[in-house]
Image 1: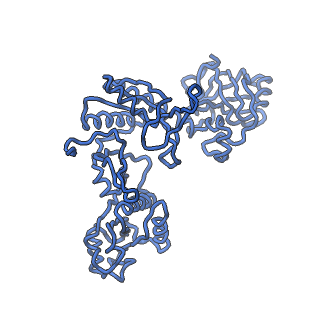
Image 2: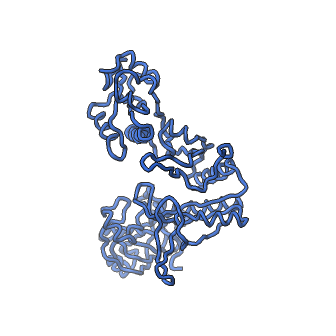
Image 3: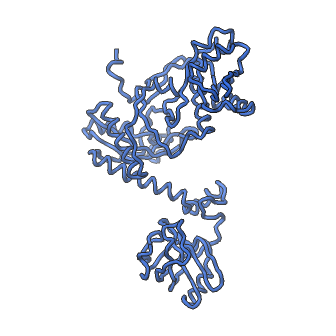
Length: 457
């Protein structure tokens, strides 16, 4: 081995030991008689010391030939640092270098290898091998590695077999378009890359392999979205001779173990919510439970007042933004513009402001007097200082738009803490939905889902 330790390994307890390190030059600070080099590998950073009178002249000359991202091997003695650096794990020590070998020279990188780089996306993609040296990407890959290891450990402990399935397959009717691969041997015929291993894992169940899994690459030829990529990795599992509660129990345990082992976070029991309940309360089949702001369905108390927008609507739904009555006209106009965006799809937004002095102000005062607005406020549990935001229209479109508005308000109010985790199970998804435009049913879930016995005529 060229090295005895990694760049993130040495501590004060190693003082007095002779060690060899290999890595990339992060920075060089030349103060004349003293030169410091930060040496980096994927485990961390260690400071190297070159000092006249303590290091050989040829070693000092050689380090002055180095630049950023040079790959070097340094051998020397571990000593205690005079000026310690509490921000890094090796900050109590440094290496007084006795020998230095340049393993590979480097041109000056086109951007800095720092957490916050000065390189744009296109430049960093061009020099991907440099970008992958940065901590944010390294941490992502490290996290994926830890997750994969813990997933395997958990599923192996629960008697699952890891079985690889083919990548070159026959096209199957699934939710997206296939990527196709032409066959060299059979002219004019094509393989498809799997959107999922669904067919193969069904074969495995029929064959008696009652607990299967693989961490598998899948391919779907569809437009890019935040949660859609042409290729992605999924934890693919299948079980035989089980009921719904067994599946929830096994995989809730897996998620809990992953958070505990990888993030040191203890998750409690996951709440279970039906699809109908999730849509009614949050307008989403993956509701964000980190904050409240549940939907208030106010159809019964707002219709019949000659306000056509409400009277003609299939549904009228509201959310109570606590403490937001002080929003300015500009801010409420921004929210109106937000819901009118094509991605959100609402026709407009109505608000009710519950002022701190107890008065009510609405954008539809012409149609509703103070007593009627008080009914809105009471129904939605408003307090002085709150702001009620209301959307109306066709049910499906309005619930979707209100879901987007709720998430936007959660962001604006700082309620969506990325380090607060609130997982849940959403069950009883509809299998099919009717499309008025094409006059046919479409699958809302994949067609391999078993119907509940009580739903079968």
